[in-house]
Image (cartoon, rainbow, N blue to C red):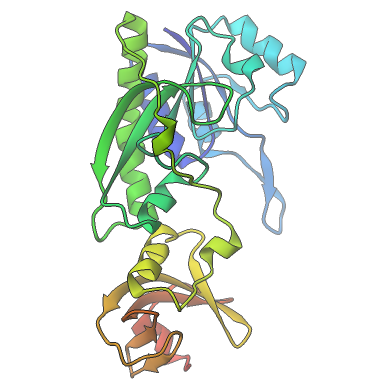
Length: 299
């Protein structure tokens, strides 16, 4: 099949690599525009663009997806299919161009966790299982008919970083399987049941701020779901302190937000039980183990 691939972050790269190695042809890659970063304002490419350049695939980087020149370029490619993995919301003018339409890889078992942050919210909600879904694009975001789904366990030691990496590999397999099914015209699209829909909105500063009146389990899952980025945090003496790793402790003697500090251990009270803090970072410093952190800091 003649394919245009659309994606931006690291999560997209395994799917792109799998397709490039397959029997199918990637005629072009669409990704976000280059950005200037750091003090030197150096130009940085998206992970997808870096991979595309290494593999000599043409790259399109539209500022606006409804731009007439961009749409004209896409039509000239005469693609059979657009494959979308972690990209922007496509307008109908774009996703209806190919012969077989467009499909998206989503990081949840749709219709659960529709939205921008499905992996994070599955962990924060304490799920023991999630998965990936490929679905045909429709006008309403994350609502299209489903091609394939595959499940993955969320282990107790998983955080956003580890689950993200495992799901990007699983997703690559499901993307290729979906392309093959469409190529063979051997699939049954399944309509999503909207009554089972749950939201997974964009992570905000408010989402990441810890409320110590919540039970320890809820805060622990919040920490896991936001580690290593952006990091769950609390404010101590006007300074942001991020927590990256914790474990639930049955100590009920601490009041919510009350801190117990020993020479190399740190406990913080919650609405139920308390948390033992294992890795954290104060504003302007690096991520450390609690033992390292307490050598130069006292609450």
